[in-house]
Image (cartoon, rainbow, N blue to C red):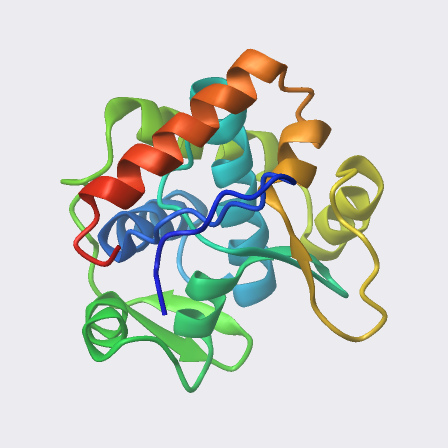
Length: 195
């Protein structure tokens, strides 16, 4: 299975997942919020950082596949790593487990991940998202995101993919911006060792 998405007429794109940047982003959120953090909250913060980065820079921070679940949008690869029984490639699980552990419904920071792969812009987005939501309780956050994010749809107990075309539309990106996203994904697919 290819890790990079395919471009089709409807702009169905999946970004290549950068587990190192995902670990650094999650570590930063846990440091800012104070460990532990509820898994559902961390998934929302991670999703919102991806969304904000796409809005500002036309690229995600760590890339992932996005889904609507009953409790709102998630970053699915990070979610799979954060669960009590993580899933992903052996190297991804090992890297995640070096820094985090699941305790009940929480993610606990074991060891801080130094921000080596994240750019200053990435860190600024993460800090902005944290600042925006730090005073909002987890379940209030879930309820607000159901109302505020047009790309989220109620999956009725299932999981519904959030396509990049949905996200681009929700962010009001224009044709030239969408073209830039397409070009970035095409370049990434040519440069990826997984392509």
